[in-house]
Amino acid sequence: MARAEISFHLSDDAATARLGRWLAPRLTAGDCLLLEGPIGAGKSHLARALIRARLGREEDVPSPTFTLVQSYEAGDVEIWHADLYRLTHPDEAVELGLEAAFQTAICLVEWPDRLGTLAPSDALRLRLSAEGEGRRATLSATDDRHGALLAELAREQEGA
Ligand SMILES: Nc1ncnc2c1ncn2[C@@H]1O[C@H](COP(=O)(O)OP(=O)(O)O)[C@@H](O)[C@H]1O
Ligand SMILES: [Mg+2]
Image (cartoon, rainbow, N blue to C red; front, side, top):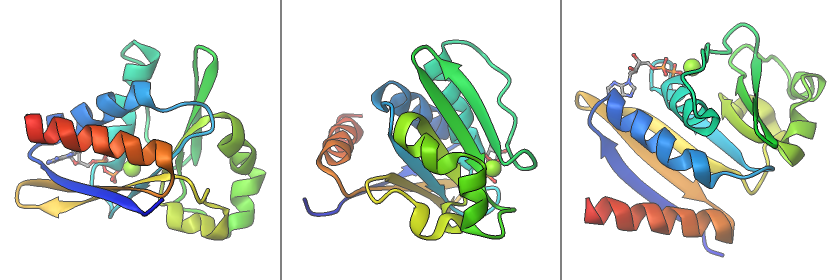
């Protein structure tokens, strides 16, 4: 399919959390969400809301800045939350078990550029950037299922 992309404004951190909660039930085992954007963009904030929604409780979700990876048991699927800012070589991602997790878990990856060619080609991408007092979110997909997800999100944005 053609690359699908949608973009919209997130006026405050509650709007970012709402997007995370919207995505939470729609990701399945083997899905990878690449979270792009500079330090302070809101990547961890979105991941935290997504993980809490998927777990169905107000779990402590620390930023994996130092641990690089945090994982959560969400019923029959694991959620991996990675922050690869400190990664110096893609090989380290393999050592962390990320390559294997891409196959079986729901993976949320901050600083995915550190993965080099290890980043799954069918990953959903979400870029956050500063826009006024808030953020601009740009989501892009390269496969049909995520493309359909973005179409659904675009319809909801128009309806809102
Ligand atoms: N749409 C938004 N508008 C304004 N501030 C936001 C928005 N989304 C998130 N934030 C804020 O951005 C700050 C940095 O978020 P964080 O998730 O730690 O960034 P990152 O993981 O990208 O470095 C947090 O204080 C969060 O509340
Ligand atoms: Mg972060």
